[in-house]
Length: 349
Image (cartoon, rainbow, N blue to C red):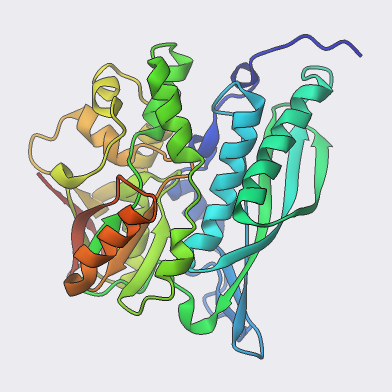
């Protein structure tokens, strides 16, 4: 069958983690779940919107299970596969775990995408899994109106190394390990205004594995972690605030950004998910007076394969941030703190 070459992004109505349902919609869908967990070995489930499920075994180890998939945010099939795989594996690292294997999730519009293109997507995903030291041990594929790819990932860790998004403590410092602006860059790609070096910068951050999370999980000074993806920094910060029954304070000036993110946001390179995210936060996010829309969009920007948001003891924060930078995350910064107070995110200029 001779299938014409076509831009992957032209076949999808959204891309990357910008495809995620808005936080408010997800809350409505999951609102009917029972409050009590009848499974005593299920250490982490649906309660706080954490990154993965965690099941405790008899020997003091835990099984971590997650799945993540989306439509393409780039046209290069190998790059799409690499981004999607790194994004899915990140959930295990965000819990303090180490991945052990993955299963591929594939949906492709038959007759619109050539088989060799699909193979390149799968090869990209396998390459990132190999970098993480895990096999793609199986999977499932369907005929789908839009291209979809991702992974179900299984990981492990010791019980005491599990890091939830809901254990931040008042007084903690907050560290972000990767720069913001991935959604803004993807919008710029669709508008054909992203500089060539911008694509390289986006690929560098979205394919960088969050493997430092496994190391952070073993540090007693690290109290809570989550990865910043489709809900934006404010959305995932709000999940941490609500789960921890505390206030998350973000220093706007301290945020690490992709080099062209601010300029592109001012040009209107914004995703629809950024608007949906903002509409979902309600009164739970407080911005500084006079905060311009473009700056707000940096905070609500959906991140695909974004960094880890780490809540840690303040006296160890500088050392932990330096370790993260030395481990290969040059944009890692202390970006705020946790305070006693209502479960809100407050942004300071």
